[in-house]
Length: 99
Length: 198
Image (tube, rainbow over the protein chains, first blue to last red):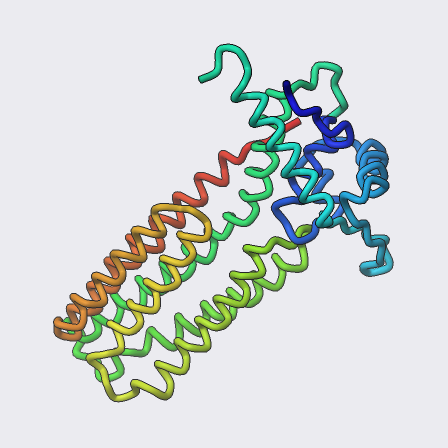
């Protein structure tokens, strides 16, 4: 029986964002935009969902009079990501045809 | 990148590894410093060797303060610009910032206060310090050419300790080619093949 995958993380863009944030201390919106190749609107929507789940923290500030959005992963987010990765590796291990 | 209905477990694994690699590639993009310092030290070593051996010039060390001073200015300007442009803050980047600051201060202390007059020790100590920086960088970045470069620089420091000064300069020149310049070009090529995910 497979562990159910976290629906918040089991989305291509949300998972991409979390995978990027898990490796950095913090990242600006433009970093996520460049690395994922997604549209600004789509990223904003997914960031809001991740923030509502408590997986990331979003800080809004200004740099040279321009708004600056910075994101970082929370402890809850790291735990959820680890659980998701464990569930994935269980799935791959138990999949018919795998060793 | 849009949410796809076909997003399954295999796709999820691919996304995770590609994104982690994409974030890591940014950290690895330090080839500029390896190439800059590699070529500057190579130039300073060979210049001093030529001035001692062929020109018999009394101020044969002149290339070092000039080239190292230029290197420091270029490094500071480049690092400041890169830091300002950077749109992510990584743990590894934070580590390197403090590590190279501490490393530079230690090297300056050694060269400025601790070993002046001990000419036989200058090149071995410089090589041992290069080894330290190269080996640690290679380990943190998991980049084997730098790890091997560090080990070779330690061996060169030992060989240098038992060699006359002009030979020490040739050992230093050969070491920076192996420990800095070749890994610098390999890093550059690796970052050129950076993974992109859409």
